[in-house]
Image 1: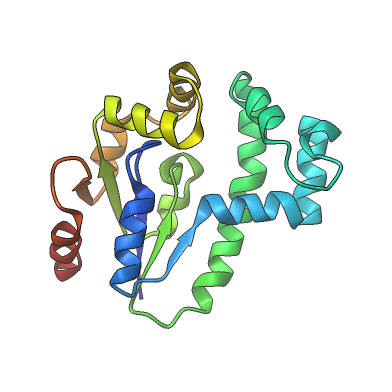
Image 2: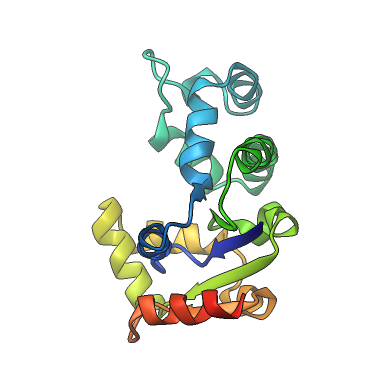
Length: 190
């Protein structure tokens, strides 16, 4: 079984690439979705996050207080580091369990923070999704209905794009090239 890591900066189009991979019958573990589930429903993760962020991290109904958490972590590097340590560890463990249940010869793991979390060490190959910064910022502003400054704050908390690109095994251009032919060519080389 070959495990592909899918990464790229915020707004690069990782979701679009994952949809295309699903069309090719490749199962995908979406780390962000799994992390949110763990943060919301896993009692151990919830207790650890409450001790780091305070009880305000959760709404009365038990759901995440996303604006509160975003404000805390994107303005305090130490809190961000602590939260990431808890969430990344739990997500990696969940992925290991998920992987054991898969039957396909190729599976994928999508994560914006693949390198930052150390999850790249669990991958056989890493695909970096590339798109211009201006395009990425516009996509995220539209998708999340946030300001350019808020997008830039998130970008500033991610590893430099050039560093990610150098560490990746493959690069997919998600700006001015069709992605399916790129993916098919890539899969043929694996």
